[in-house]
Length: 158
Image (tube, rainbow, N blue to C red; front, top):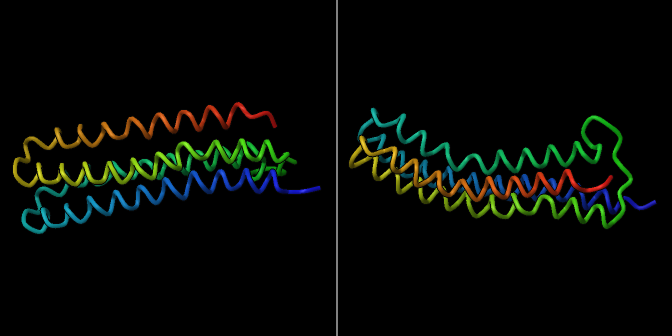
């Protein structure tokens, strides 16, 4: 019996966690670079820029969530791995793609938007919530991709 179906399903978990994680790492790094300059001049602004830096990290968490749900659903976590057909494996692979791909791009885009928000904190700290709102708007697409991935994971017959 071939394990190709199971291998494809595991790749779905890898795609979700890896690409969304890369997007978050890049986004958090972008904001961290901008925030470091602001904090070096005025350490009292640390909490305001920290909020902005945390925002792009959510895509990586969403990708990890899908990976765990997927691996649990196919029995790799806490059970016996399911004997999956190749079409089932491809469906699980496809389930990791929405959050993986959208997480990659939205994490980077959110990082750029949040880094611009750091500029607001530097010049007008009382207006920092506007930078947070602008960065949070990018989050909408990551949440939609998370929802699509969850719906796919739980609608594949095993």
